[in-house]
Amino acid sequence: MRVRELFEKLGLSANHISAKAMHIKEHNLTANIVVPTIELNASIDTLTMSQTPFIGWALGQERGIEFLDEEHLQPLSIAVNAMRYAALEMDQYFGNEMAD
Image 1 (cartoon, rainbow, N blue to C red):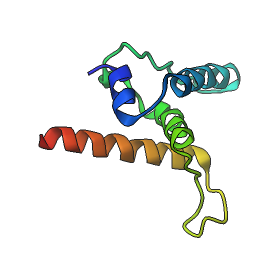
Image 2: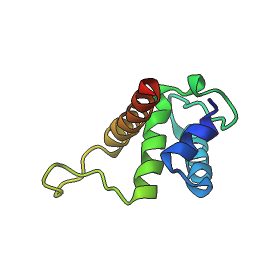
Image 3: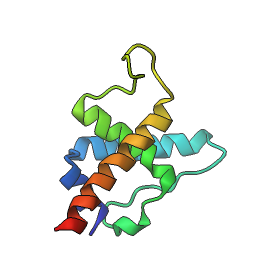
């Protein structure tokens, strides 16, 4: 499966995919640790853990989800929560695919 196919199955629009690719490039200009660019035509096996916060941000923006504490009062670490959200979504998708 290609990264583009995964993103489409997760419901990410082309706009959010493009925006997050640009966000990674901007991040890399000032970061100590460079995050690999997400290649949409690459195999999903090329996705890295460092890319999951960007995927989670895109999913959250697409679905209108904010990364807040359980009481929805205080913002938590957006990077960590976005990463957790992306991992959960991809895990649910792959769990369903493996069961089929």
